[in-house]
Amino acid sequence: MDQTEWGRKGRFLNVFVSSPTDVLNERRLVSLVIEEINRTIGQRFRITLQVRMWERLRPTGENPMQFIKRQLYNCDLFVMIFSRRFGSSVLQGGEYRSGTQEEYETAQALREESQDKRPEIFTYFKKITDEATLSDPGPELSKVLQFRDKIKNTIFFKEYSSVETFAPMFKDNIIEWMLEIFDRIGTDKITEQKRTVLQRFFALGSSKDSRPSVRIIYPPIPWVEKWADVTHLLPYMVIEDFQAIHKFTKDLNIAGCDDVKAKTTEVFDEHHERFANKIFICLPRNLCAQRHLEKIPESRFGFKIEHSAGNDKETKYIVWKRKANDNPLCVYSPQSKYLLIQRKKGRSD
Image (cartoon, rainbow, N blue to C red; front, side, top):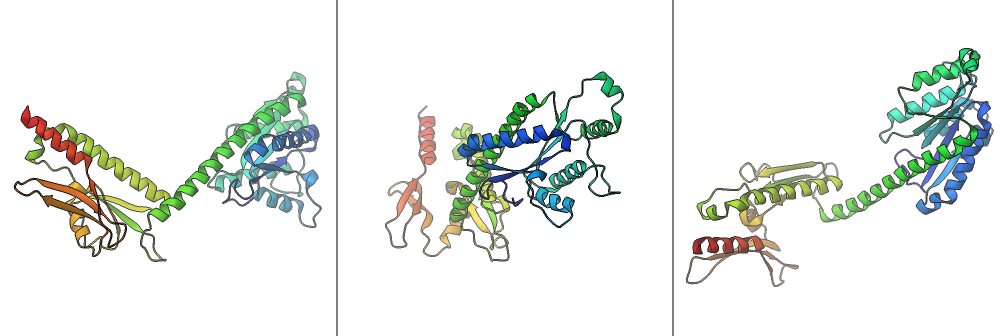
């Protein structure tokens, strides 16, 4: 399957099985385990595993190793099994001592080049417990042991004691791998859905040849005497500002916008940033945002201040209209009311 569509294109995952000819029973068990997986959790997850092995490959007039390499390029899981035979080289005088070794090296190279570390690699070696055999392993087993020692520090592999123990071990490993794939598919799907929604919400203006840029403008906390009785709230206000900045930045990144910067109103240069999309936070404290909104003709969103008759009390609120000629919807800040109550309590105490 295509490298850019891990587990998505029809949710078919290709499993390539590589080994010499002395592990035919293990190869047969791989097929049986995968058939069982497809009938059970595969149906539940809507993921189908497709086995690729030389017994099932069609006849071809091209070089067999080149044909096999093409199968490896679309491989999601590479399974390599060794017992006592190392196998023989496909090409006389070739770089590799066996076709299995060449297939492994190809899969390993593809994994290193892939951003999503594909294919996954399962490697199995049958245990050799006979001391007499180990003391005089012969040319074939010697190559297997040398190859095992060569790769043991570069990749995790399993040893199995018999054909009977191989099947449950392989089944456990592949179920765990499928659960990881399913989690990844689910996460990717949620992220993709979220990106679609966010892209519609953040309809950021940009030309076709450029990526949108965003500036998040937030006000610093000024020290003013009238706030002296609520200083215990200031740290929480700072935290709220930075949590909002973090949330906006994260959502904008998911929506595909990488050029996101946060600036205080003190360093924000409206002329220099005139082509950037702007997000103003905390309007009651953000005089820069209030001035910016006042300049927008027919703005459906603004900030208003009303002075009560007979006293110097002022009421601040946000005005929002669904349509240009609609009656405005006024949004009053609960924090403003809370601060007012706090100040009254401070004076009465």
